[in-house]
Image 1 (cartoon, rainbow over the protein chains, first blue to last red):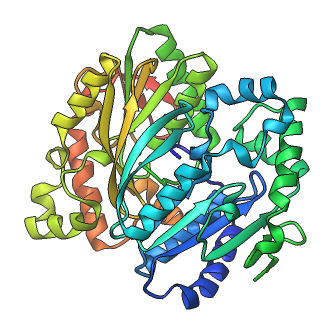
Image 2 (tube, rainbow over the protein chains, first blue to last red):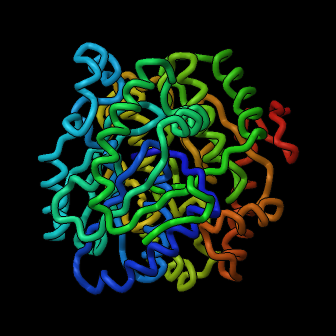
Length: 213
Length: 212
């Protein structure tokens, strides 16, 4: 993902620090994969970024993978595709899971890979070549990140889609209308199914600095 | 540049609006804007907002960050600069200008192009391949961006590192130490040598004014 804007707040930093404390006991010297799943605009990529930075400061090389780069239908065609195929086309099946799995495998083996990389300013899918040789931790963030195989630690981030409406208006990522709202409801339902599976649950709603590990 | 943090404020939006107006006035195919300014002056923020505004006018603009084109790798740069002497090596010659100019050529011809792309979390240099077909505009962002050949609109932000020190600290992207200060001072001296290439200035109050 290129040209994403993070809106870093104190509670994100606190959550990242708490999560790191928990993780530092688990990671060790092996290749380790963290998934950050959760609601739209709940702060997944912000947490991924902050966690990545803390890991780096502690000498653990970390690469962030954003699952929004792995949609089968590119950004500029997605809306039309969804409208044509109906609301049931929205969800987990929209992602290229085979490609995601092959990249996770390449990470495990420390190989050089080609990744898709969406530029949010041009909405085009570029290609990124990266070398996993020196990378010890992979952070995968995305709505359905827990569905990836071989995850060592699963984080789930809470947010209701109504608040998302506000959050999205703010970041201006997508045009909001009734179809978009339906999409969010559909995604919300599928996202919530991952909740019980999480090792760490972050909820900024209940009250500002609350998270349960 | 991957995993960069931007802090977009109203002053960036206001300055961007004026710059966009200027772009639209002089608009031609395959337009190149360059935004120069010292560390912390808001180049990347301005670049982002300008690109976003252009989309509203139906124009796809791709930002290119010059810091992806350093000769030295991020993890080796500090050591390299110190061993060669900051005052001797920090400057225009630290960048791969031939690669930047090749990229400009690919853009002008609407070709596919590969370029270095620094990931600020891994501090590794990835390779990014993008297709310039249907990309109508390039916004080059970086300290010496307006030094690039073939720029149609050169913008220079006059805020120096001295004014932005506090913002830098808040952002926490780079450590604030004696080495960093010497680099910033040297960069400040170096960038003055290309200031005359600017068409527009963003002044100390972040107002956009034309060059005399």
